[in-house]
Length: 570
Image 1 (cartoon, rainbow, N blue to C red):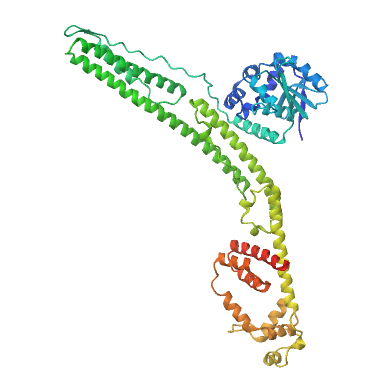
Image 2 (tube, rainbow, N blue to C red):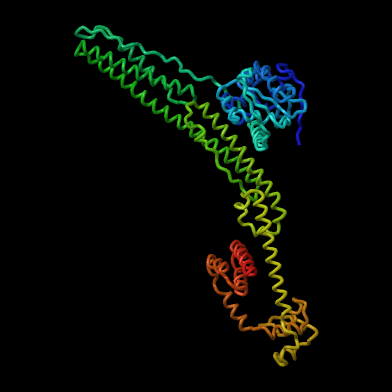
C-alpha cells in the first residue's frame, strides 16, 4: 500500500525548493545511510534542521548532485533511442519520501538516471556492478516512482563515452531505505545544531623575541630580562585543556614552536660561549627558559595524545550506552523474547580518523545503522511472537527454550513449535488411551473367587455405596474405600471390589518403594530413556520422569515420546 503522488514542479522554483526541504529525497539517501563520499550524515541532518528552502536546495545542488545536468539532456535522446520510448523528467513522492527522476516513460515502467562521465564509475558499470554509493538513489527512484526498471547511465553526452546498466527493484533495499529514513526522522527530531566548521587552522602564536647578546670579555648588551619575561608569559598562556579540533591543531603548532625556540636558544648560548667564558647570568637564563619550554612541550605533546584518546573513548562509550538503551527498550516491548544482534563496531568505525568532527560523524552514523538493524530484528521477533502466542497459550511449558528457538528463520520456527505441540498432544492421547485400556482389561466379576474378601463382601451392600461416617479414625472402613472408588470412577461397587481383589498388591508395594527412592541424576535418566529397548520398561521410566522438576520433566517427556515412536515403529 503506497501513497504515490506525482508533483507538477518546475526545478528551481520556490515551490520546488520548499518541496525538497520537507521530503527525504533519493539524491540524499546515500548520505542518510553514511555511504556518500561527498556528504556526511551529520551534515545532512544539520542542513535539514537549520536550512531554509533556498539554502537547502543550493546546498544539495553543490554537495550531493553531480555536475552532470549539462550533459544529461544530451544523453537522454541516446537512451530514448535505445529503449524505443520517450523519457520525461518527473518528481514523485510516497509519503515523506521523494524522487526526482532524470526521466520516466509515460507508462511509468522505465526510469532513467544519469551521471557525468567518471572513469571509475564507468568501469564499474561496464562490469555490471552499481557502486554502493549510487545504489540508494537508484533504488529509491524505483521504490517511489513504482518503475519496473531503471537505466543507470554514465556519459559525457556523446555516444563514444556512454555506458549504462539496468537496475531492477530490490525489496531488501526498499526495506533498508524505509528503515533508514525512519531512523533519520527520529534523529532529526532530536537534533541539536552544532557548528559545521571548516578544517581548523592553527592560530597565530605569540612570538618570543630573539635572544640577542653582544660580548667583549663580558656581556656588553643583551635583552635577557625582556626575553625571560616574555618567555614566562608565553609558557603560562599555553592552553592545556584540549577539547576541540581547533585546540589540537593549535597544540600541535605550539609543540613545534617550542621545539624550534629551544634550538634557537641553544644556538645563541653556543655563540655566546664562543665569545666569552664567564657568562654565568646568560647561561642560567638561557638554560632556564630552554628547560621551561622543553617541559611545556613534552607535557603538551603527552596531553595531545591523552586527550584525543579520552575524547574518542568517551564518545564511543556514549554511543554504546545509547545503543544499549535502544535495544533494552525494544526487548522490554517484546516481553517474551529478546533480540540477538551484534553491537556496532564503534571503535572500528573511527579507526584512523584524526579529527573529532569526523569521528563524531562516523560514530553517529554507526549508531543510526545499529538502531536500524535492531529495529528490523525486533520487527521479526514481534511477527513471530504474534504467531506463536495464541498457538502456544496452553503449552508454554513446552517452550522453555523459546529464546533460542525464536531466533530461527520464521518457517523453521513455526515448524518447530507446531511439531512440538502436536507430539505432546499425541503423547497425551496415547497415555489416556493406555489408562482407559487398563481399566477395561480387568477380569469380569464372576471370575472373582467366592470368599476372596468375605469380611468385606458380608459387610458391604453390593448395589449401594456405603455411607461415609464422620469423625476421626485411624483408617477408613473397607466399605468407605469401595464407596470412594466407586464414586470417583463412576463404577458399580461390585466392579470396584473385583479390582481390589485382583490387584497384585505386592507388586504395587515394590513399585512404591522404588518411586520413593531418591531421583537418579537427570543425565542418567535421560540416557536410560533414550536407550530403553521395550515399551513396558519405557512406560515405567515415564512414570518416574514425572517426579522431576518442570524444566527437566518437559525434556524427559519429549525424549520419552521420541523413543516410544522408535519402539512402535520397530
